Length: 445
View 1 (cartoon, one colour):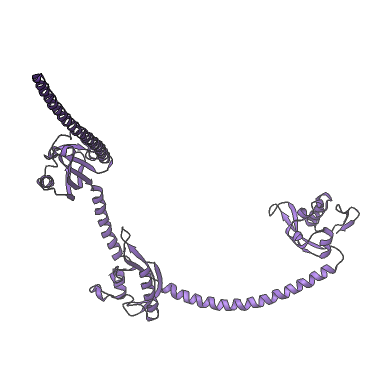
View 2: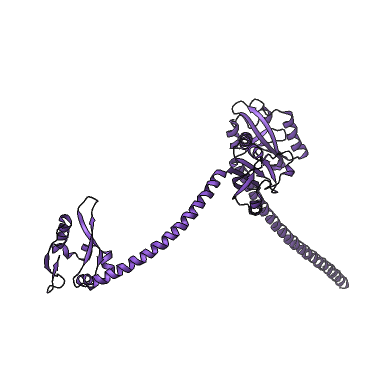
């Protein structure tokens, strides 16, 4: 019995030990589960971060694709010929402007060395060196002027712009922009020729011409001016504005000149200019500001024309006009006096006419042409009885014709009677009833 109990106690101890081991294993498993749970959360967080990073990378890739698309679109639309070259100066792509300007095909361009294009016009040591500096030393080339002669298009003057760029997969390339300035140089040459022609024209023009600088000092006098005044251009600093102008006009001229110069305004002025022999001659000067193609003020140019004879004749004419004006004023005074007397006489005659009991009117004929038929009459003189008879006022009888005011005159045949008197010069008599007031009867002489 005692042995059985000992065995049972030993078994209990083993069970207790096993239970403790199980409990310990459970605790370890729980700890592992917690660690796994933490790892799971970390993995989920990492996955979320990776997902966010992937989304950002996708957005960046889309933006890069869009940017490259924009770049391709820009290259395809700009007017300057553009090439993309790799490190070996081989043409990777060219825009439409390049093919159009240089009249080459895509097949004969892409994949070939720059120096092999056309008849190797680009195979110049200094061009090769310049592009090598771009790719090796990251040098930017701006407005490098080059003149080349091509088989199909002849001579071209170009400005070359080049810089290193990085494309997909960090590949280095050269962006070469070729600006065709051939026509610009031709225009510059033409402008220079015209400038020389213009300067020669001004120098030998018959008018007196001066030019002032932006500082207001005279910088040029043409031959006509120098011959007229005897002034020399030997020392430009000694050229004084208004130096040969008569003292009576000099002050006003200088004030006008400097105010116009400040305000950039044109002006004209008459003054007496001293000739080389010491005689003063009347001149008319017209001056205006000058500007360069960019709109910047460059000074003034003035032209002078001799008007001495005209001025002298004008002064004589003004004297004659002043005399005639005084005579006309005197005649006007006498005429006004006569007009007043005529008005008084007219008022007296009108008073006499208004005192006559019969209606009196003076009619003037209206014709459809100078030699045509009589179409109407207008009233120029009338008395008060005429107004009472016709029922008109002063404004109506003078502003309206006879038939406009009294259309019934044609029905009463009075208009024809007037026309008959006008044609024959003989008097006529007619008694008619007034259509407006049938009980009244009037006689027309």
